[in-house]
Image (cartoon, rainbow, N blue to C red; front, side, top):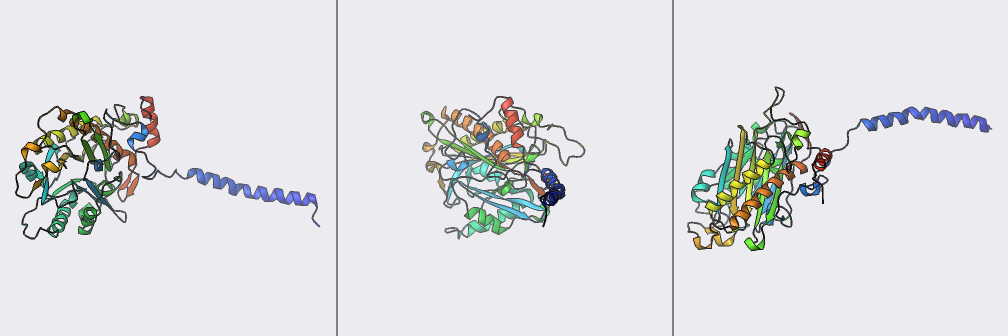
Length: 400
């Protein structure tokens, strides 16, 4: 029979023997870095108290608050060398070639490959959806969209289509296989046919999958503003694909500087901080002519500047603006009714305010919703939300 004394010694011995294992487990757990927030957990700008401007957003705070606008996205991730995608923006659900919308394109800095821009500005209209993708995928995406459109009803005699495809260059750390031009016709068709209204996914998705902004992970972002009823009650929505540089500012707070980002590059960096590109798509239901859409789109560059961009030498900074208003829509080969358009009125100033605010917030959303991503060329970290929250609080920016 075992005595109480011997039993106690045995139990004590067992406890002593398991302590090294317990300590090892604690140390191992401490060594594991915290799991980064997934896109669903990362906040949008307003959740951090970042609400630029004076105008209220639409119900979704997205480009799809503009009636009729649809967005479809396809994310393409393959092995460790492909991180890219397609984002499609449709002004309405019909056939854009047969029911065109007035449009304009503004170039902030022209280091880019915006396919179809000259005809849009010459004729003042869009006749295809807008596609965003990676630099070397522009022509494959355009070819696939032409094929898709030619197959639509009523297109059997069409012999010319002006596709509009924009890009940013994600072929550095993440999409290192950009030379393989990984976008396929199936990806393009999926983006176009899956386009829907409602909430728009942001961050490291679609054409923003492999991008970076201000040296953190960039991506897709969106926002909207509604102007007061006294000046028309119209909505302006913006969607951005961010892949540019500079020194980040958030509502005036020097977040980039506080986080140690500087404008000048070093020998170890793959590219200068100020370079990169951004595509900005502006939609409105205000009945604007292509001339006034160009004026509206140019104000998006002011929203871009508020975030700390300088439109560097290697940056392609483009704005595509269009109106979804039924009264300014054009049928093929038909003249538009000029009497239905909003003229040079003070209402335009409120729309300018709306697009500046929405562009600024859309850029912030692209950063905050983006997640850390790794590829064959390295890892691009998401901007650290906790540190951003602390910095914003120090400068008086807090959730209300």
